[in-house]
Length: 167
Image (tube, rainbow, N blue to C red; front, side):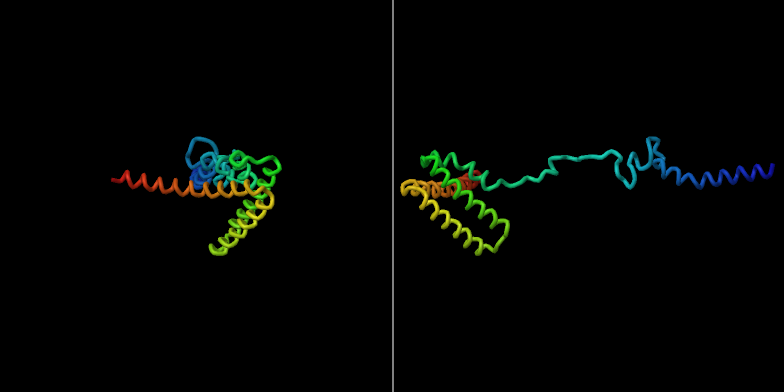
């Protein structure tokens, strides 16, 4: 009887020591599923998750062609370009917009950037002057100037409205 009693005590003692290993393997006392609360090894889920796809997609900036294609209908309508002249303007604008995008990617110093943009503008103006009749070239230049002035006026209008609402 003494040996059976010793055997029972040793068995209980070993079972008591192995409880930590068993509970660690089967969920820390949680009655649901296998270890780590349904996780599969080192905290990873055994079900692969794709996650939100909206965050994974990087928003790509528009290409030069997309930018120019968005502006061409209004330019064609305002100036009255025929298909040949429209092709000249479109090609010239795509080249200049592409060069400006490349300059932004390079991230040059502000003075150097300004010089390069001025060179691009001069090249664009020279190509348009060579490819368009004089009256349509002048109309294009006026259209370009008016767009910039309209943007500045809108900004001033917003500032004026803010100032009035504070009073």
